View (cartoon, rainbow, N blue to C red):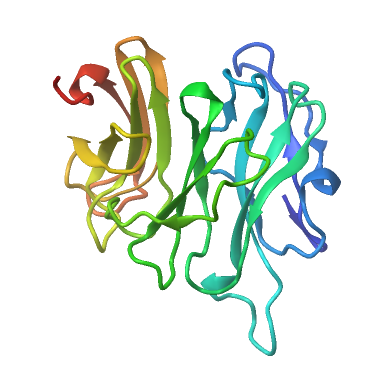
Amino acid sequence: VEAAEGRRVFVQESDDDGVSWSRPREITDSVKDPEWRWYATTPGHAVELRHGTHAGRIVVPANHSLPPEGADDGTEGKYDGGHCLLSDDGGRTWRIGYVDDDPDGYVNVNETTAAELPGGRVYLNTRTDSAAPGTRADAYSSDGGQTLEQPFKPQPALVGPVVEGSVLWCGPPDVLLFSGPAAPDARASMTVRASDDHGVTWRVAHTVSGSPAAYSDLVRLDAETVGLLFETGGSGPYESIAFRRIPIGELVRPR
């Protein structure tokens, strides 16, 4: 929600699988630095950790922008930054976890998605429009999203336009997935890529089509199936929202 004083942050809860929702409850003071200007959560899904010392923690990737320096208007990508929201009590209280917002113009952290790796380590993947190679960057957290092991680094193996993407850990059969357009200079060719080494290297696993496509989100439907929700269309990427079921067997490298 955006008001005169800037964007505000709210939480809603559902105890009937999304049929109905509670009234919005504001948490801005707990999760937004007063100097931040732009503010958005994810987009896409959050993560509830299930392994390690932080099991039960909810991790919500988010992004923000810093105030400009000098006389410019603050619209440059170098002012983009990323952070996450953390809750250790089922969403009753929230706080800020890691923050990565160095305005050096190299990696401009923006819309971010997260997945829990084996043992509770968190993998984070973000869009970036900057001087860094490619349009994606990634990072890891070994303390449940509280801090990053290192700042976000370029991930040029994920070729595509500047756009949101989604990551999902599937285990078993132990594979990390990424969804997003694969055309290098256009929002088109929705593709699922897979990593067999926790995000270090990537390979094409499933191409939906060469049609225009933009934002997406991945979900594990059952032991055999992954769901892909994505924007697409015949002449533009925002004409419709489609859903595809993909057998996990198609995404795993043959052994």
